[in-house]
Image 1 (cartoon, one colour):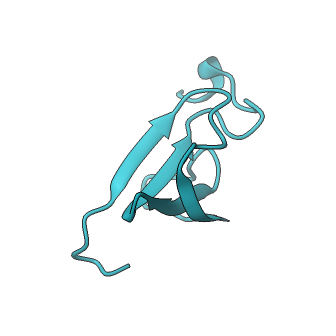
Image 2 (cartoon, one colour):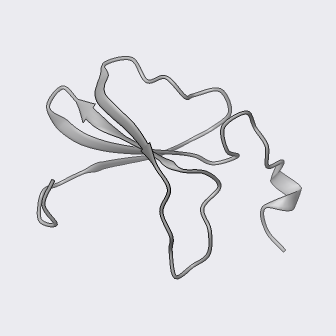
Length: 70
């Protein structure tokens, strides 16, 4: 994947951890100048298009909504 290649980014709700049609997947932890994300990102290809998924409450719904923002 290059910096100029378009990527689909999806922030999903609880229970969406296995996306139908997503292949060549791997989970990877990332850092951000805005703080730690709720979980690692799921990278893969959806019909040849690079895609990245972030479970907004973390895998297993470990972060309830009231604890996500001050």
